[in-house]
Amino acid sequence: MCLYAIHYLKDADAAEDIVQECFVKLWECKAENPKAFLYTAVRNKCIDTLRRTNPIDTNISPTDLDGNISDEEAAERSLHEAELWTAIDSLPPRCRQVFIMSKRDNKKYREIAAELGISERTVEHQISKALKVLRGKVDDFFYLFFYTA
Image (cartoon, rainbow, N blue to C red; front, side, top):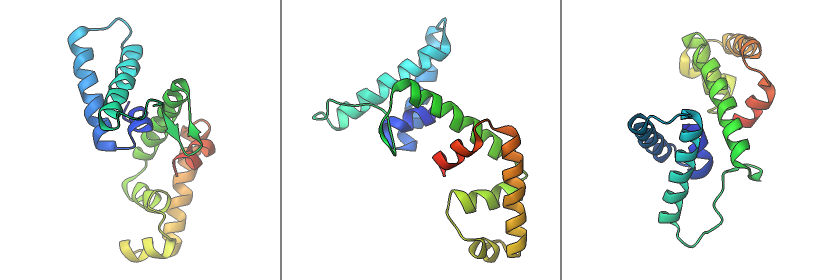
């Protein structure tokens, strides 16, 4: 849900706050379809927040690097991103650390090796290991990887 909210807000902290509020509302009202309730509540709360911060902009919709996307596409991408991050979180600690430093932080193998006190070959091996594990766990791995990287 946080990833879905980020498509609107571009602010992780604000997204987390909104999602937390929506989960509290879900708990209080005990909706029949929790998934639909959450997506609708998060979307509406994000739009309300954006309208309060920028009342002049009336065309508010989720976006990504390619421009505006539909709510359904934002929800689908959020689910895929969550699947990818769940798989990354399941990697062994050192492997996950090296992979994130390389792919998320855009560090070179040499920089990672120096920072962690390991060889460049070990960095290369850890990233290769992570990619093999992730390919086995995540559908559409390359789409997700390049979308989030």
